[in-house]
Image (cartoon, rainbow, N blue to C red; front, side):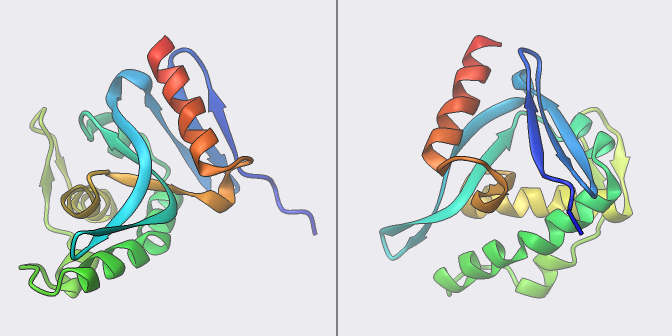
Length: 160
């Protein structure tokens, strides 16, 4: 069977991700940074095959993301947290606490997320601590090398 393709819609207003599970969208003004994800181990950096996105605030992204995509992000990107935690043996965080943190998340607007939305928001917070980005796009879902895709996203963001 042919599986539907994964794609991105880039416009002058927003970046949108589409997959067979659903998608997410965010405006360019809500994106604070786009970059290549690297893991730091004892002062050495190793590039990882992921594009990192750091948001200005989580409110719109979390409230509009498709639940199936949110759960896939939690599952597919957990390996990054495991790698980050193993590279920092003196980390004050426990892996179990980070992977399953569903404590209520209060946004900058005072809205409270619970359940899956809270798990995603808390995971994004941990991602920012370890990597400087909130969520990631794997290199196997893009149609070009990571550096080229980052350049494309940055050009759209600059033009917005």
